Image (cartoon, rainbow, N blue to C red):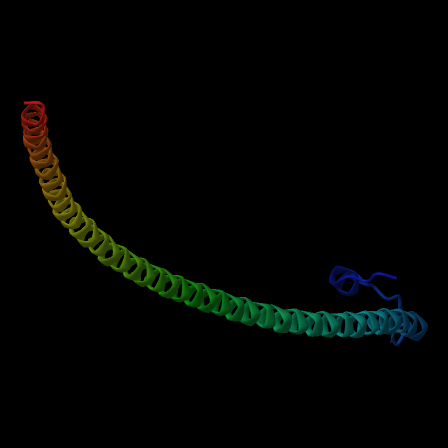
Length: 166
């Protein structure tokens, strides 16, 4: 039974000689009590339901806070990992550049040494060519002088043959 405020206010009891009929009033009070009892039970059920929902909301808020903390921690960790990776990358690049510079320096030294060696070999070659020319020229002179000597010897032999014939 649904009793509204208007129903209660508009409720008319039959009157008797001494006032309202007791039976009508008691019946109305019984209906009102039943309805109020039902409302009280519904209220208690709603309060229990509300309490359960509030507990769930608290639980969800707790979970949300944990998730937010986890996200913040994860973001910090990600930032730290990125920062460390960038530092390591810079160190690797610096080491690589240093090694490359050392290799280039070594290569330049080696190149300079090779140029010095080539210059020295050119000097030795030029000196060798000069000595070889000198030896060849002296041998040519020796051969020329032997040719002259052979020519003189042949002249002397021919004179000797002429004199022997004569």
